[in-house]
Image 1 (tube, helix red, strand yellow):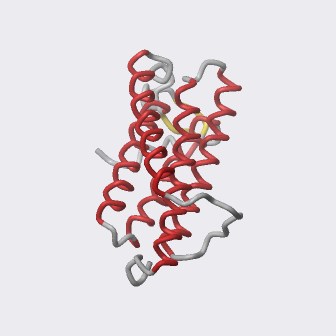
Image 2 (cartoon, rainbow, N blue to C red):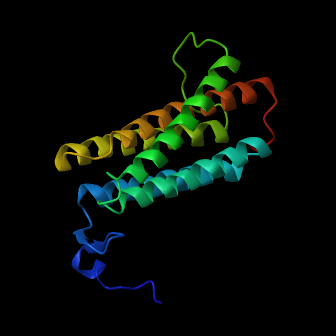
Length: 181
């Protein structure tokens, strides 16, 4: 099967359910942003020397594929199965957020990205995650009925990536980050 379908030549693409939509519709915009977020996480993983964090970033990339699959099928994103999957993902983000918040020192001032390549890359991923969240809100407004768990997932994901970036900054400043990070 060829990657070339030629539907894109007309400015359209097909969703998972076969529906043909414009490439600039909110749903395809959100899917493109999710793809970009996955790439940003992959770039962070490529400069990450910590095996545990690298595995966590890979897990986030895989969860994004699951989320994108939900969004790519408009009939699925409001289903009970979708609700259960999105609830599982958002609950896992909440647990990871709570764990990191216990470990990290209290934040006393605004932080600027750039302590290390890894930290800066994670902040880029966080910013793209917030864009995904904004596009999901727009899609929900347009379609009335997007699964509310999807919005929670994006909100928690951005919070979690922000905490990962804070940890990377602390590691870089303490010298525990590996060279090149």
